[in-house]
Image (cartoon, rainbow, N blue to C red):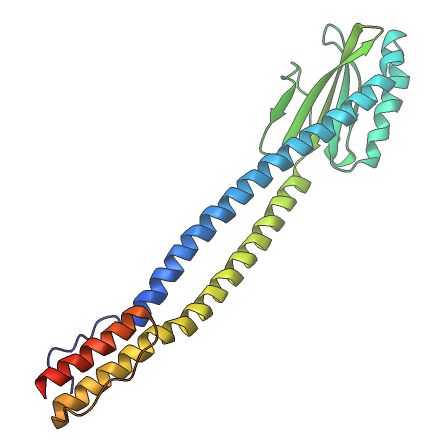
Length: 234
């Protein structure tokens, strides 16, 4: 039978636990989200930088082929990109954006056409990253090189970092949970003992009972006031 006036709602320990987990979860969510956004931004910049470097390297080697209109040699230079599996393909263009030579990854051969009109210097899509760089020889622009890269490595990195971050966040929340449970006992335990003494006084009318000294400023004051109340009654 539940004593009259007893609150059967959520206990103080449960409230403390819920509040701590909620605030910790919000903090972890904000922190992990900011980390993932920052890492994604850095990873994209790194991917663009690496693809630009690749395009500049191939472009500088292909400058002579463009200067002497040697499309065969230009195509051979682009074939070196086969060693980079993430490269979808590359195209050399004359200054007037006319097609000169190309390379297309084997799995895309016959199933993909390069754009007729060159995009901007950097173009992102859901499947690929495209970089267009000028080919310069003796301060004269001979043409342009377009290099396309798939985003499998970038997507794989994003998924991996998301899983690692989620695992760390889950571990942190689990740690917070156990620490809150342990520390919560230090708050609710003394209050439960004080409530038990109050019930004994009410049930047995034994006003000689006294609450033990409780640790902490607030709990200590509560036990002092409780004992003072019993002294006044008795």
